[in-house]
Structure formats: C-alpha cells, structure tokens
Image (cartoon, rainbow, N blue to C red; front, side):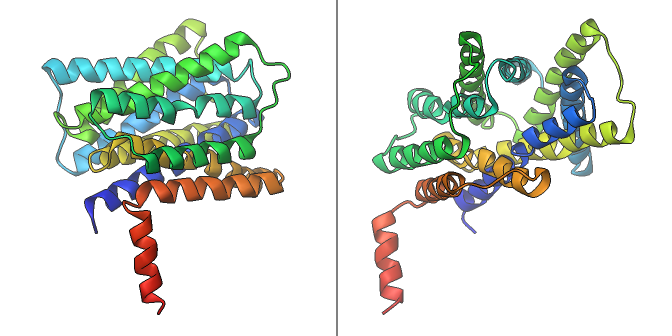
Length: 298
C-alpha cells in the first residue's frame, strides 16, 4: 500500500473520531455533565491513551529544546481553540457554528502554500469547494440568534486549527508524531485543568458521566490525534484538510443512528458532495484514472 494511501486512511480515521465529539457533547448535556470537566477529561483521557501507546511500543521520549517549546505552543493553542470553539457554540446555532469552523481548510491551503511550499492545484481547490458546498447543505446556516462574538470565536478556532495542522506537519519532521501528540495533550490537559479548578472543580458523579468522559477522551481525542499526526507524516497538509471534512458527515450520520435525528434530502446530497470532494482530492490524475477505468471495462 502506498504511503499516501496509508496517510489518507489515517487522516480519514482521525476525522471519523473527531466526528464523535458533538455526539459525546450531547450525551454529556443529557447526563448533566458540565463543560469544564468534560474538556479536562477529554484531554486527560487522550493523553493517557497516547502515553500508554508509546510505552507499549517502547518509545517513551521526553522532548527538550525547540521541539519541547513547540509542543508547548501547540498544546496551548489547542486548549485555547477548544475553549473558543465551545464558547462560540453558546452564541451560534450548531449548524452555523460548524459552517464557520469548517472554513479552516481554506486557511490550511493558504498556510501550507506559504510555509510548506505545497502546491495548490486546481483539482485541490475544486475538491475543497465541493466539500464545503456539501457541508453547507448538510449543516444549513440558521443565522437566528447569532452574535458577532460567536462568529469571531468560531473563526478564531478555525484559524487556530489550521495553524495547528500546518504546525504539526512542520514538527513531524523533527519529532515523532505520536511523541509530539503526547506532549501536546499533556500541556492542554494542564491548562484546561487549571481553568476547571478556577471555575470550581466537580468530578463526574454517575457511571453515565464517567462513560462520556472516557469515550470522549479515547474515541474523540486520543485515537484521532494519533491518527492525525501519523497521517500527516505521509500526506500533505492541504490534502489532509479536505479529508477532515468527513468529520461533520460522521457527526450527522451518528446523530441519525444514535440520537434519532432526521435525514433530509439536503443532508444526503451534501454528504454525497463531501464524499466526491474527498475522493477527488486523493486522485492524482482524475482524467487518467477515468481512462484506465474505461479500458478495464472494454
């Protein structure tokens, strides 16, 4: 299997994992679990998982010097953009929040072209447009009750996530992706733990609440982050950002299956556009691929 194919599968797996975050958020709300402990245990659980993975592989390494400071910066950024994202959700509808946040692939394209010398091709631009158009159909954009503060916070989170992806791609050349991820999660855990303590720390009190924090830590954070950084070692950041649009598609699908949410024609069409955009971003030569397919059918 080609390295780029492996990278694409890892990034897709990461997107699917991150797509569970909103579902766990709904479960947390239903279980009466507050946001500060949810975010703290999200990163704590993810960090424990990644460090355990490194220990099993015999690859526990403490970063020092520039890689350590870079990991601290990424961890701080991740904590801040997480707070910005969840705070912005209180000022916008869920659909509009997702539409605003998932403009981040546009910023990844710009940043990767500027700092990673990655080529921005017409095919990649078209695939991104198709994916974002699909997201617009899936999520809708109900602007009722929206506030400028909410838009600013979600845009800040989107830009921060784009910087995080591109920064991860740069740092993956000087430190192992999984080791870097472990340090990023540790920093984010400490910062979110301090925030939780200042606001008044209250532990989960029921098996359901503990199930939610374990699930969001493992499935919604630890596994997706390992997959993301491992995938970025094989794949260009701009292509990874397009694959990331599979995240809200996963959220919608899980909402239908687990929460009984409705599936509309617009949602189905939007999902199809996202799939087409993702597939197009991964085909090096679409015209040549179609010609080869036609020859095999003769």
